[in-house]
Figure (tube, rainbow, N blue to C red):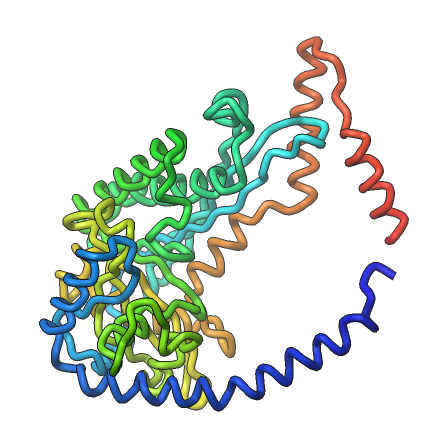
Length: 384
């Protein structure tokens, strides 16, 4: 038996008991957050000064910063969405396997181009990039999964920036996940190299005034909650009075279907890297329906925030395209981009076979899985 369920049963019961006991505590914390959100709703400048003061003492502070809208603002979407072009990209990857028969990595990016309401069929493209040799050993050692993920994010953004040059405004580019990269900051030169490429791609989109956004479904962040903690009564900088409360819980009570929250600036350790027009901002949006809210966090750069028409168009498109997904609201272009990009096991095996065949054709000796990998595969077949 691979899992001892007799051991797990009392632990699962304890987990459930803890969840029940925490519910009341979380409800009290959420209520306190809601009071502060209303109390400071129109005190944007005071909150900006408080964050600035805290950052001077703690450069690693991560929280939301109000911009100009009231904290409790909720803005409706214009539907149907105005005409525009949408480019959505998503990526998948194959991480190098030292135990496999061939040592390589792969970044695969799928892109869909749509013009809703035009009557034109969506166009799809796939961009596949094999990683080997120096790209697979950027610092001497084998590239980590985190570095491959960064390569994937960079590739997505560069492809969108390149394709955007051939499009007319208004143009929206979408990616799954935040615009801020969690693969940095890093000290290794390889990470710095790819991060600079990522920023350069964003600069290209800024020059073309592309409405670019990163979509985070069902976010767990507490950026606005952390802002409210800074003004909580008897606040201790070393304590988290509202720990466990998320922004999603906070805005579920505010945002009606189709509405977005106020725009906030993202204060984080990466703020200096995303400077000037690239300064990262975000808002929450409810793409669900009455009785079934579906909240997401949308990250956008400053150049989008400064364009009120761009912000309105982006909100309308996200709401409209999420409705296309039916009872599980999520932007349809991102659904399709993921379907295009995903690398299936059969694809993985075929790539390995193609590499092995090409090496044999060039007179190199045949390669095999490691003994460890061979035993794993044998055991897997036995279990099946």
